Image (tube, rainbow, N blue to C red; front, side):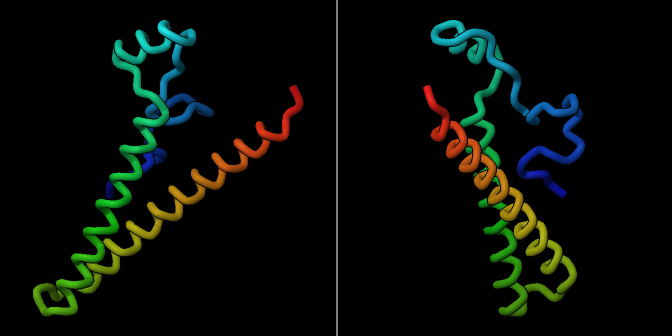
Amino acid sequence: MTDPLGLINSGARAGAAPGIRPVAGAGAGGAASRAAGQTSFKDVLMKNIEQVNVLQQDAEKAIEDLNTGRRDDVANVLLAKEKADAAFRMLQQVRNKLVEAYDEVKQMRV
């Protein structure tokens, strides 16, 4: 089973976002440290969105194959659909948390 958001068995320290390492400094220093092998939040998010998309496409193909008779393993089709659904729901929760955080920052007074 793939983990599209990298949250299961990530091996990351508690409280840290998986796959995301802190960027030291800002501006040119931050860009230099990302170039040294660190990934940005945007890159991690886009990679995971693509993985969720692949899972959904695989599930839809499995359903289509089952309907046309090219497949007869209903259990694996259901498993593929459930994996895609769980990955999408998790991605939706990440989006909801991001929107909440944005709204909270937007409400801050300067």
